[in-house]
Image 1: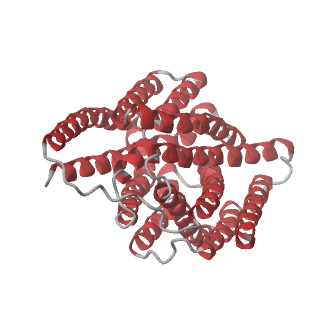
Image 2: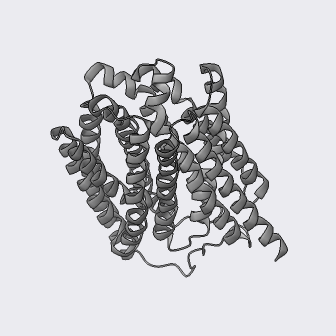
Length: 396
């Protein structure tokens, strides 16, 4: 394995571990808030919206920070903040303690994702970029699905302390790996400078389509709406579990299905590039997202819940993949900043969906499905915006 391959493998290792640690913590934090402090759907949705408010500016600024001050510096800061936050969460048993811990952990996490996205994509040509982005998506989706699937089992075996202790161990290992990776990358850069330069300039990055900016706008609009659906769903999983009388373990088994479907979608989209710069795939996925989301939240039985998750996971897969691929493909030498914008759009969705759901439950508590209907209406507004961008582009 060459030095460059070692660095690339280490970056993907950091990515996979970070996905596992953050999903184990954040997805089951809502169960903890329910069981420790009596949070219901409304409270968990409001909490999720609050964390989304933090995520938007933090991701945007962290992406800029990594671009300007160095990717490894950003990683070290991010992992350090995450480690301190997890220790605080492990020790503090009050509501305020958990809120502060989750807030700081969210900020720390924002230094990680834009940086990793830029690191794995850096110096890649337009021809190699699709393969790199595909592998990136598959890696985080695998550990994401596994963490969601087994998280409930871990809680039943070790208690809620596991959602702090296990991620803490992972984050400390990531921090050590980052220091090693930084040293190794610095040595490799010195070796490269000592070698005689060739007369051939590096191949410039170029967008794969002259309409790349239009598709980037469409993807950046679609992605926050997909996370509106995702984070609304995650926040109400404890409520779904209560509805069908599922333990945290069974809820993890049943409600993680869409994560595995998303993983399958990533694998297909990685190897088949026919969807690149074809609007009908993104438009169809958005439409399926709206229908499947509403069906999941209002499902009358487990069979309907499972079937709806299949469509939901596939739609989410293409929308997220589009946002990241177009961000990196059109990003050129500012991929760190573009990665930050990509993550900030995720934070926007993290905030808006749960906020709308919480407000609907606050002011329309007499309607059982008011939250699902309100968020679905918000998704329809996003679909209208997507179509408006595409029709405007067609006229120009």
